[in-house]
Length: 465
RNA sequence: GUGGAUGUAGCUCAGCUGGUUAGAGCACUGGAUUGUGAUUCCAGGGGUCGCGGGUUCAAAUCCCGUCUUCCACCCCA
Image (cartoon, rainbow, N blue to C red; front, top):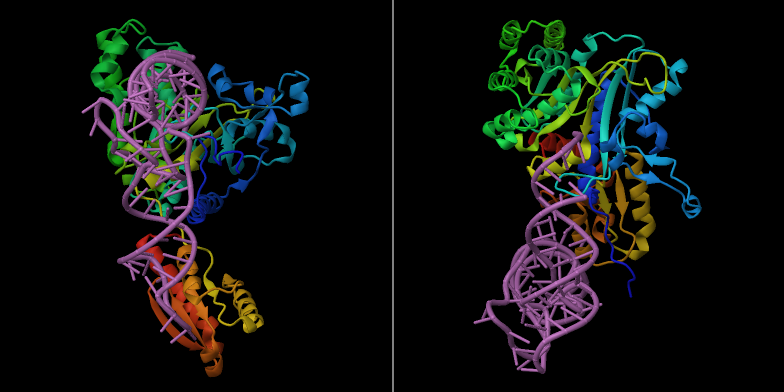
């Protein structure tokens, strides 16, 4: 008699082993590229003091934070003073402020951990999910050159993930704010509201957005609305076009001019870093919801799957940790929501199917020869081949069935015939073939076969090694 | 937090206007002689029809409540 239904809470991702392998392959690719660009790993605890997590942000974040409390503390009626992190940027700020003296700046760190949000369940919305973040934190100042480095990292990662053509869309907050100032929309809060509305262009259609901006809440002049829509409609195609569009901006505003200058420098360096011009573009509607961004902002989308939306985003902020330290710590960073990305890639049929890590199953042919099979397994493992030995007596057919279902490609069969001949029969489950080799050639042969299999997988994009 | 849907086997669902022991596909377990899987054939296990109440001779089916999950808004990865 069961006492509870086995189930997970909504909004968490749980995978079967082969999918888990595919997911971890994705994380490995991300990590490899972070390291390739000179970022160093850190981890921070899932639980932080709630006053740390809640200093900066307003009501919306607080609504989504999970508070943590021991049952003892709960019974005593104490207020929870701990909470689960809801992103990796706030813990980074705390980390940098706390360890400022021991860190070297510019501090380049990557972090790939789970974060928690009290979202109401919805498609592609998770309450527990992985974020993969990189940030560069400067002391007192940080060159805009670092803003150009991140698109190179993004390009390197998504090229290697082989999920189709993509485009890193770039904008600059200074330019946006300067533009709005020139239209008489000076208040930062109001600018954000307008931007959020504009962000819904694709979703709601131009007419509805136009109506909303002219309507009660905003009450903007028709000419102003036209100017906004024309401005945010800017999308460049190729490097030269992007520069031309920057030249064409006729906004008489100091802040906007600074933004344009930054964009020009960033674009030039992105190209110098070897990112093909097909893979980056200006998009003046990119604003990013988070209000701490102050300069460059990025968002990356898949050309063939616009429905997926942004797969990677980030930007520049002027002061990371003003709540925790007096030092001025400007930074620039990006974040990949790996859990959602993986889920979306699966939905779009773009996720590779993982291959089992187990490469060989040694069949149990004869109970009396178990020590022989165990020894063979050990030899294979010492040769670097992941091997499982069949430990329970079962019909051979069942052993093959097990290998097939578990995704194990090779079954080594060592029965009385083979022992007499000094050979091993190897069944290749995937190719539905069987061959026989001398015992002493087994490891060499398997290595060749396994390597060929990996090459084939890489070519077909079926699974990362 | 606001609005709208949903709930039948592990999964996807069927079950018309209430009528005998609630079905299908997939999955699962076992079998089709001796050392060869995913295909085929045969057999089998598994459901308090989300929960509580009401109407009725009779409720998976109608009504009310409740919970759950999902969708949209908000916000975001």
